[in-house]
Image (tube, rainbow over all chains, first blue to last red; front, top):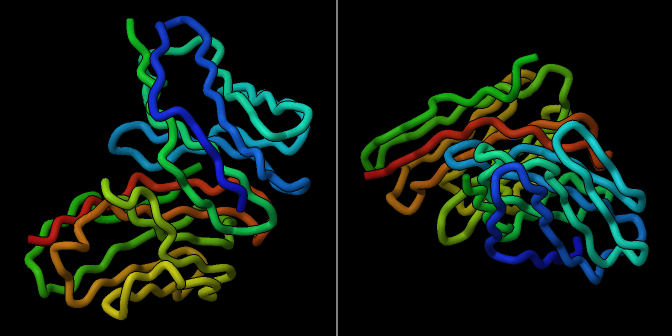
Length: 109
Length: 115
């Protein structure tokens, strides 16, 4: 699986959009981009995944660049409960998830 | 629907004792994964099963660790004998399909402390 690079930490004001970047410059054509988050003391929580097109669900939006070398997870209206570590993972046709160190998002009042 | 259920939530025991962690996957899921999380090494995949058969156990640290899945609704991870360096949070996850790019869903983990 391709490696990903994420900033170690970010801050976001409550009610504002949180934009979490991820670089995956070695991604291959069939690899999906997955996002998980881990709130303190809980198991990782699946957020969203995509291949080429932008994706949106009730939790977040995923924007993938046209060359697919980077992506951004958008939480449109961050709340204090969105404070967590966010993991970007690329994966193709494999059962394995390789977690990196992620981005620690702190949402402040 | 119930998510992945793990038990116990917390376990404290002395080194040398046998430890058994339990997992009930989401109904209908046929892939099951065991992960371990520590501050030093982050989240690591230990072993995973598909249709109750172990597919990849390359992440199992040593022979003291063993995992079984006797049926589609239950799995165990056993450590015997336990050592202080086994202290970690152990997560179980399940998904549908194999190599299908379906997301994995995690339980809340077992926090294991070996004294």
